[in-house]
Length: 291
Image 1 (cartoon, helix red, strand yellow):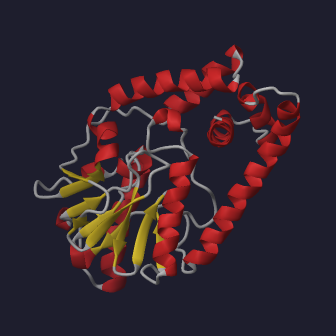
Image 2: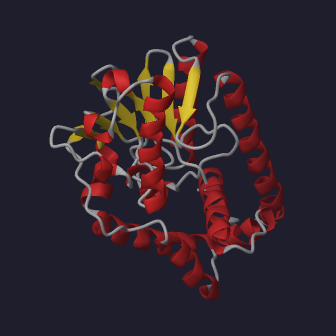
C-alpha cells in the first residue's frame, strides 16, 4: 500500500504524514530531498509550519514526529481528535461496539478472535502524538478550507486549496475506502458517507474543485467521472447483498443475523485482514438497508 504525503513548500504545509514504519519516515525524508534536487526548493521537515491531518488512522498520523518544530500547528477535526488524544479509551469503546456488531451480524464464536485480532492491528499505537489545532467542519485554516467528509472516520476531512481538494481516504482513484458502521459513531454509517460524497460532487460540478489528491493511489484529474465510478461500484455491491438477502426477506426473516454468512459469499477471502474489511463492508451496508 502506497501512502502519500502532500507537500506545499510555498505555504510551509503538508497534508498527512504517512505511517509509523521506519521505511515510511525515511521515504518522507527522501521525498524532501527530491524536492530540492528536482525543483531547487530547499524545504525540510523542520520548515513545516502546518500539518493537516485528514483523519486519525495510523497510516496518516504516524509521521508526525518528523515535524517536531515547537511552532508547528498539527490540525485535525474535533471528532477525530479523541482518537489521537485518548487512543486506549477509544479502542476500549470500539471493542465493545465490535462485540455488538458481531452479535448483530451473526458472527460465529470461533470466528471472532481472528476478526478481533485484525481489528486490533489498526491500533492502538504506543507513541503519543501532539495535536494542537482542533477544527470544526468548514473552518478556514490559513489558505486551506476544511471540508467535512465523515464516513471513513467520525471526523474525516478533506482540505480545499484553490481548486485542489486533498481527499485523504474519502475519494481514492482505484479503490473504495472502508466505511464504518453507525454503531461506532453518530457521524459514521453509509448514509453519512454518501452525504460526504455528494458534498465533494457539488464542489466538482460547481467548478470549485478540478483536481483530487488522495493520500493513497494517484491524482484524480476528472473528479466527476471518478465519483460516477465510485457510485456505480457501491450500487453493484448493494445489489449483490440485496440479492443474497432477498430469500430471507421473502420468508419474513430478519437478514441482519445472517450478515456474516452473506459477507463470506460476497468477499471470500483467506486473509483475515481482508476478511475483516469484507465483513465490515457488508455489515455497514446491511445496517443501512435493514436497520
